[in-house]
Image 1 (cartoon, rainbow, N blue to C red):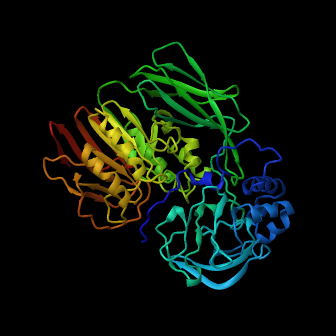
Image 2 (image 1 turned 180 degrees about the vertical axis):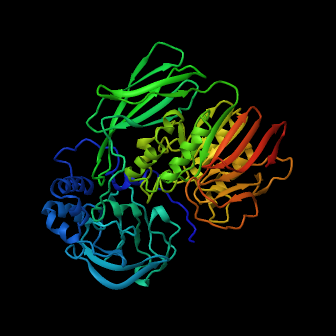
Image 3 (image 1 turned 45 degrees about the vertical axis):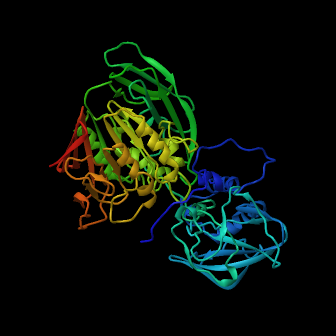
Length: 607
């Protein structure tokens, strides 16, 4: 296994590379604005839907696209995918994965010639194509109409030895420029995958890196999908999430067909007679390749000034339809509470059954935490439709609190669909995209919800330290996707930046997912078990879908390992006592332990 580290540029990769086909639909730009790959493909897909049936859509190939595209569309797709300016004449070397079936349509007509050179990393062999350009603007075309993830990348060198080359990026504007040599990375979303064979003649050239997600920008071959749960005029996918203060607020989100543009929420106390009404915010969400439900309307209502510890009933709807009556309870200021949590669920139908069973078995649960990988492909709205469809109305009465996993935020493109569907507090680290890393308090507990996929660990360390240093919470929980204590794969950045803070500030439980088995560590401190009577952090990795690690050997620091899948956890907090129980869908208890807070120490009891 290649160790995976993560490198970031400072803003979401989707924004850097202009990939927006599945993001919030923007208003059309003026006709005088430059045509982009995204705008061209948006129009191309619209024409494809209008002119082809389902079988024809599934039969699209490169030959068809060569006939279907207009001359103007081909020009944009051949020049607007990658643009920069050079101050001297240059040779551009384009490294194309030999496993890609078809050469991009524009490559030879754009002046590129295939050479005998090859470049290699551990997974791919790249053939080298070269073309000469005068000083000025260089425009390169799409990777192809397929979705070949090892997309091409380039190197640039002056034609004349001794010329001082200056490269001015135009698109993407924040282009990272490195040096081509062995050990260099080419994909920001996998910078642990480095080059191990570079011809001498190419070494030292300016290396323009990319992300694997760029394979999706012109994807039409085998691209079109359907959703099992298309939208309609009736509101569905009603989902609660907690605001930063769950005593006085609640966030409600739902969807309808795109023809609905105005909606409301009506709510009232269980023992009251007055009904309050609030108008919902509206946005259109697009998944361009979703042929039976390309657009949907999304609605968001943030309820405020609620009474603590109060049961509310509510209905969402519009003039033509309304949801069933649902209910939630705001947090009280004291008293015991419980919550559910699970690791990866991957929009699995059986995971949906699991979560429904959990909410039915423990209806008093204040919320449910999912520790990442909510879906298989975070860019596909049909996967999210499956998550909400299979869980039915579970999250309409029990708030869903989550963090992104690597499947929710894929290929360097960020978690745009995740953010469009789930609204979380905007109280995370300054300068980072809001709603992905955040904090909330629930009674006597602090919950730090951390995005370990989209942002560097070091950039979030100060925020974590501040949250932990400035809380008087009795219990401190931290949730993120990648587990720091397993024998599977090291996450040195997390171990170095976060684990010492968990030790210093006395974090009680860290909840993770990612590897598909259950693991509970001994209470850990300083990278080893803390020992009897000493405070330590218990790290738990769990799995809400099928397992992939049968008959694994327990790690040295493991207190409990379970290789079967489809598990969830019930956590009951009563003052200074915590009971953590792991169950399967049938309600069988597979693991449990108790923590009891005492002055200057924490007592740990396992069952």
